[in-house]
Every structure is written in C-alpha cells, then in structure tokens.
Length: 273
Ligand code: NAP
Image (cartoon, rainbow, N blue to C red; front, side, top):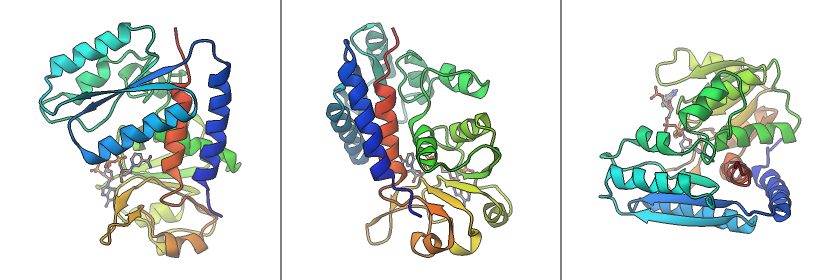
C-alpha cells in the first residue's frame, strides 16, 4: 500500500488553515536565505507559497554569499525581538565561513519552527515537550499515524544520522516506545538489520534499500531526494522492485517531501508569546 504523502499533507494543510483563520493575531514566518544556491531558493519559495496558502504571513530575507556571521546574527537578534515575527527559519546550508551552529543557537527557541535549537533538541531528548519538533520526523510520524501504523513496540531501523532527520527521528520513535537502531556509513550488516525491521526510515541520499533487504510486513519510509543519472527525482529505495514486496511504502516524490512542508506549516502556525 502506498503511503500517500501528497493526500495526507493536503488534509493537514486544510486543518492548519482552519486554525490560522481562527487566530486573532496572524503568524509571521521569516525565512533567511544566504547566497545563490538554486535548490535552497526553490525550497525557500516553496515554503513561502505553502505559508501563503494557509494564511501565514511569510517574508524572505536574502543575504549575499559574503554576508558576515555578525550581520546574520544581528538580524536574528532583531527578529527575535520583533513581536510581530512568530517563526524564524534559516535555510541550510550556509556558506563555509559562517558557523551554522552559532546561527541556529541564536534563534529564540520559541520561534525556532525547524526545532533545531539546543533547547528544543534537548527537551526532545529528555522527554519534555519542545516548542517545535523538527519538520521531517514530525511529518513522518503524522503519515504513519494517518495510516494507523503502530509505532509502539515496533522495531525501527533508521538509515542516516543527520541532525535534521536521523537523530531527531530516533528520539521521537523512542519517545513513542519503539525500539530503534540508527544506522550510518559505518554500520555492519545493514541488510540484516533492514530485513528484520517493522519500520525502515531511509535518509541517505543514494540508492540503498533493495528488494532483497525487505520483508513482506515492512513499512518503508523513503526520505531521500536526489536526481538519478537521467536527471529524474528519485529516493533511497528501489521503489519499483520493493513496492510489491512490502506492506507499506512512501513514494518519492509524493511521500515524505509534502509531509515535511505540511509539518513545517503546522509548526509555523503555532504562536508562543
Ligand atoms: P545527510 O546529512 O545527507 O547524511 C547522510 C547520512 O547517510 C549520513 O548519516 C551517512 O552516514 C549515511 N550514509 C551514507 N552512506 C551510507 C551507507 N552506505 N550506508 C548507511 N548509511 C549511509 O542526511 P540528510 O540531511 O538527512 O539527507 C538525507 C537525504 O534525505 C538527502 O537525499 C536529502 O535530500 C533528503 N531529505 C529529504 C527531506 C524531505 O523532506 N523529503 C528532508 C531532509 C532531507 P555517516 O554519518 O556515517 O556519514
């Protein structure tokens, strides 16, 4: 069965819009974009469009590649202090001369719609409710919940240990009483681990999950997005061969991608005073 992220995300966005429509004070999401990275520009514009569709005001602040770290940090302080701004998002990656962690740490946790600040990550780890959960893992859980896929007690294998997907996803599954194995490029016997998992989340960025690795009860969540040799958007999973052999699978495109956007808009609709 296909986990239809496009359809589920549309339903979530409708609910977000209904909520925003009822708010007296409208949320305002500010996205900071540094440099001329074409994919970043596309992602930022998509976020702006999605925000507008659900009634969230959104602004993009652009800086050139050679912006100084101080200029960026000063802008974040200014946005933190601006009560009209309810969400701040810095599009990654940043140029090498800027310390990404310093920039993330400057964002007020109450406006950190990406859920990347140490306060929000720390709260997630110790089992407290963060102000915001990171969008992609939150979107994946929303997708599983929509299909009533049981997380509690499930054996979950996550491939990829990034701060934006693998690590927070691990914690969020643990908080939902799953047993998690987090894999990466040094993991031994990956195939065996995938084969025995109830739920597999792959966030690598190259073809990694093949037909022979899965079992008939597997739930496969494909986070990867990259272009194949023909320039076509694809994911980490060999979809054509894996899809007939598993219980559930999310496609690329149309799976985790739209869920991430919906989940981010859900976050952006939350206002903390
Ligand atoms: P990332 O920072 O690109 O890191 C990739 C991870 O994969 C690393 O942890 C790496 O291990 C691991 N890896 C690489 N080769 C491996 C192998 N042969 N076996 C096992 N693990 C391997 O991760 P990311 O930022 O989460 O991005 C991953 C993919 O997801 C990308 O395609 C990205 O575009 C996509 N993505 C999609 C969404 C969405 O909304 N759909 C959101 C975020 C990311 P090491 O740590 O050992 O190097």
